[in-house]
Amino acid sequence: MFMTKQHLKTARTLGVAIVATVGFAGCATYSDEFAGINSRLDQLDTRVQSAAQSAESANQSAQQANQRLDQIESRVQQLESKPGRPPRG
Image (cartoon, rainbow, N blue to C red):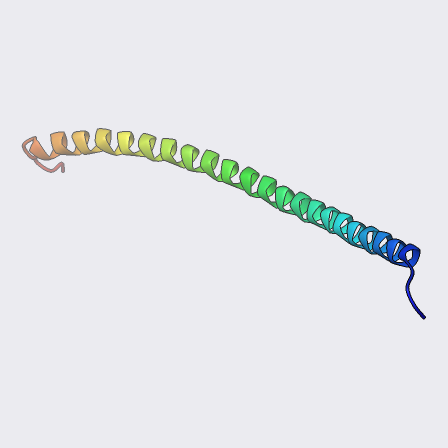
């Protein structure tokens, strides 16, 4: 059976339609994948922000603890430099 020009034109059109359909279907798949990746990135961003806030809070607490230790150190040095008192009793 010989292919006529009409048959070739129809086959060519059908081929282009199939390729276009597969191509568009691929775009939808990539769109879904990008949406999933963006969702995971948003979750990671939230976790990083939370960790940064926790780290800042821990840093402030450590600075306060260091200030208290400095005050205690000063008081201990004062007590150690005083002459000893005679025991009672």
